[in-house]
Length: 341
Image 1 (cartoon, rainbow, N blue to C red):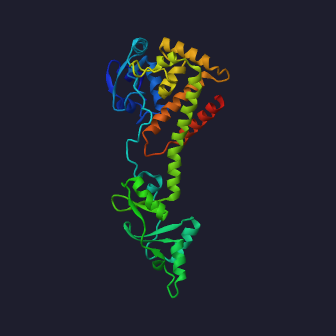
Image 2: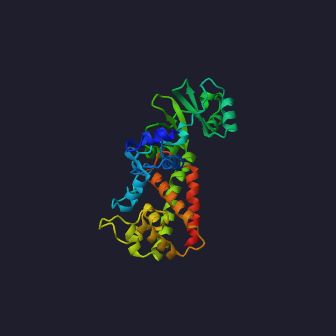
């Protein structure tokens, strides 16, 4: 944590967002780092223009006196940075190597192992298949319960590991497109994942695919339901002119339709603590129009803003699934909205 003197030395300078985060030992912007940095700057009477919390990660910000920001907020007609547009498509291809199981390591046996070792390991760890690998890169085959059964069906065959192997083991390279590998997983029930150096890094099963799709699809549907319920509540109670007030001043954007708002604009529509007097006054009227007397407004707006941040995370379809704490926040807000409709 930088000292007050170090922070004051930044006044009047321009600094990359990454460098500002690094001063506080942070690599990315999350709720904790943004709160800590904002409070530290505020304690010494400083802030940034634009806000380091909302501008692009590769951007630079001016460190200025806190009162300067307040005057800019009151008088500026500049539009805020636009959040991710509705319906944004994934920006990066999903690879089979992005699945957690593909990087979790792989348990295998050497070709010299006993068949009983394989079956014991499969029973105790509930494996449906077990690869047999010579060294670290040479795949000899795999043992499955089906291959063991077929071996016992053949008369006169020695009950050894080599005779219980299947040789058509499905293998995918870690960089391969996730969706291109799906038919193979569907057909075989699993696929071994090999790294670029030839070593095997994991095994992806049909269950892993189901789990990954659940983790990916569920937040999309939860955010979609939240937005549907928000529009149903707000659209029925709030005047079109009030909606226009939070839309960008470009003529084609000021439609007055609730369906044309983004999550940041839903927040502005209701936020009673925003800095612009005119919008704050309109937000007070909007809240009164909703008639939610049993709802704590500050908490509701805070949670709505959290949903906005989570929505922007999932809109970019990151390879890593959403953290459980974010799923929990979405679930809580869905339940609130269902009660209000």
